[in-house]
Image 1 (cartoon, rainbow, N blue to C red):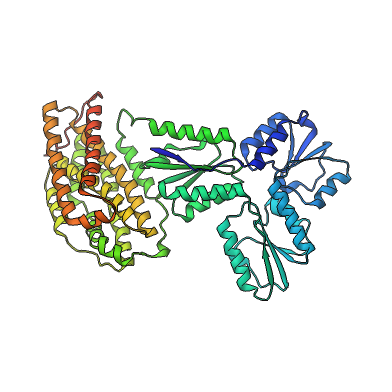
Image 2: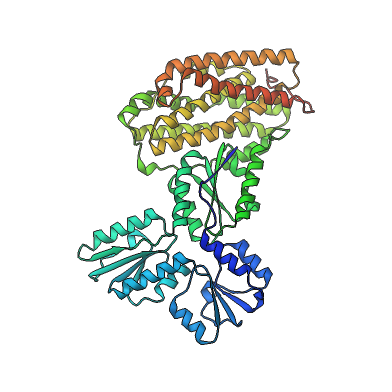
Length: 537
């Protein structure tokens, strides 16, 4: 598993400066932090250990008991400053300069006679600070909240962590619904927030999933997660490395990493080191148990990538011509009731006393059926009819029919190796967001299918002599080579559209084959008895 870090991620200068100022305070017990210094649980815990008093953001109406009051990076209104100073409190100001700039601009717009619209979250402490000095204003969080306002002059400012795309969309809606008004848009979104979001956007097409590090109450961290979701990429938000879960990365080849602007450098680096250590770790010495595979298949169905069905197929005429008939063929190939496979697996499970193996095979077949359904749904959207039969699909079905279970799995394993190359090619052959996301999901699943079947074959073959094992591998290599030739002959146009030559197809599939052989050899070193997978015959 590769780990790719966003080019810009993590702490901004405003938070860094605030932390430096706090670190220099010699008597923390004399200071009350007026809200959360930053929206980061780790930082808040460290401040509590040092002895700072803290009040929750929604309880700031009370007068602090300490002589000194620290204003957080999110800032407060001038009205609130005067209230605290009027009772003799000494203020320690760590307001972010960019937040202070938003305050000044909002007050200037009001001074100029504008009705002030603040794009942001109404309950966010930063927004409350901005509007605390305004008399005539409205807060707009969503496009749907935009109205026709009676004012002839409208000035717009933004919460500093607002996504630029959302600010642009709301600004456009304000202009459209208020043609009578003179409108001024003042871009108060902070540069570090923009840089983090732009770096994330550039990274998303390169990864299978994202890890976003940041506090649970951090608005800019939540926006990073939301951006991943809008682009169809699964994102897991964690506060620190302890919240990472290995099961998130089953079938994941590339994981992206970014962080909110209030995330400590050491926290981000800790997460990165843990991810990279997982990426370097070899597979466990023993394969997964059948029960573990059952749990994986059950969870995998509910943990798929979000698919933008609402966008439609978005397949160009050129893409349709190059890959349309090929997709029809592969969709048919993914569909199978697996009647004989299920029966053979049940006999084998009974022979080895592992009923969960038969259930794992059943769940695998169901997952293949899900692949067929989603590909079929895409064909329907694209106006491509589903095939009822295909000679290449017929050949593969005949190869599996009435054969020992080992042969059935070997044929399936060959198909999975071909599918790994095929879905990579289809991903790169189109610009359709839906089809690219479908291919990304199928690649994740096929990677785990390879592991599933490879482990079972390796376990069943580990007691064979070296010369018999070599003959088995040569036979399977011949099957793979012949399949590559047939698949290329049938789907060359689609592969070429995705940047594949026959040589690349051969290399990708045979790399997978060599990995399988290597895994079989490693498992030969394990101790324990095994039952031949063809025992039912």
